[in-house]
Length: 390
Image 1 (cartoon, rainbow, N blue to C red):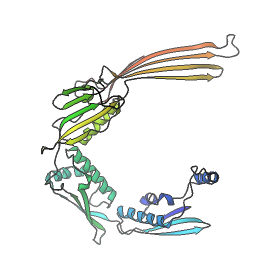
Image 2: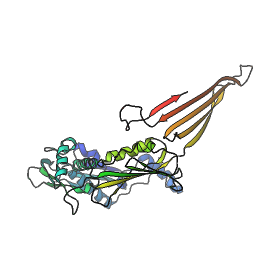
Image 3: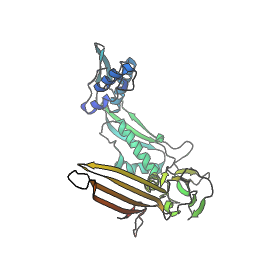
Image 4: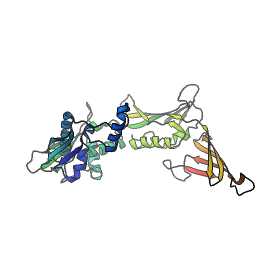
């Protein structure tokens, strides 16, 4: 394969259409191909790039992919033909498209069995939708709308809602190149509506730094929601609970789930912070128990660094040490103590005292990072307080 040519495709989509040609039929990078020819004779076939060999099956697959791409971009009657030109065992692959008319959306309707979901959709649709009457029919826009409304549902308590509940039907049988579109949201099988879930109790488990959850653990009940189990015996409950953003009685919200994981990770004291998991209660109250399992990093670490300096007859060295305590006062605060000693010698031949010390520098410093903000209002979602001195 030496060249790919695509004809008859609108300039807006010409570059994107090339991406739908199978990778094994894409022309080689000239430099990588030459490396392959140079080294493959010695068995080193992992160097360079093997030549792309013409495969009629992959050519047909690529033709179909380009045709579907154009149809998904509103050219519902698009057809693509392929042809191959061969000269001296080098092939040029030509795809010729007949796009036909571009279809635009004439009318948009929805069919949503759950009235609460219908109201939520109609209120939010003007804000997020990329599908509008008069616009080009584009399946990428339909997928975008599906994903956006899925997140809206997840932010409003619909823990059990899946993208598969959302479907689109369109009618393109009109002669004027227009499409009537209907968005359908089905109810769960055997149910008359989508349930809204609220948060119940939360179990927080902190393993040891080696990942094991064994031995004697600090087990504490905090408020009416949290059961705190710490096998490391090194953290106060509030150092973790303050960053759990789903509170008992609140509706489930996927953004608060993500925020919890993000804030616990940003403490930089835990090695493993997976997303909270939820367990549906077996009764009919539509409540969720939350479980958060985390593994801390080793509390203490010490890093030594050194470098040798040489420049214009002068030489020296630079030694540094950083001691870190990742859990000061059992509150997930981070203390760093840094020392640095540097010495520079002058070895210039014009001096009477060779290797004389030209400069010495000793620096000491400490940083203390508190996971929170000193504020008269609730600032749990904010960043950290940083205190440092040198």
